[in-house]
Image 1 (cartoon, rainbow, N blue to C red):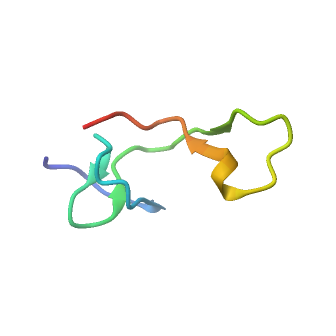
Image 2: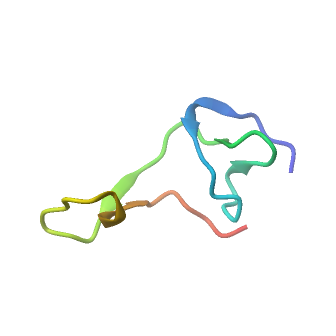
Image 3: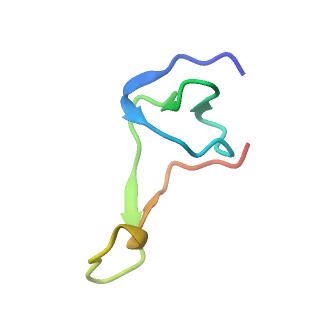
Length: 54
């Protein structure tokens, strides 16, 4: 995949379609971070809702 890395969004999720392989950055202009918890208290309670399976 030939992508333009957004140096403001670091990412190590290589299975995401928006990941710039070899650079560990996202190609999107912005991302949406969300949660399914009413009161998240831990990093594991948050999700990148911009994730798309490669």
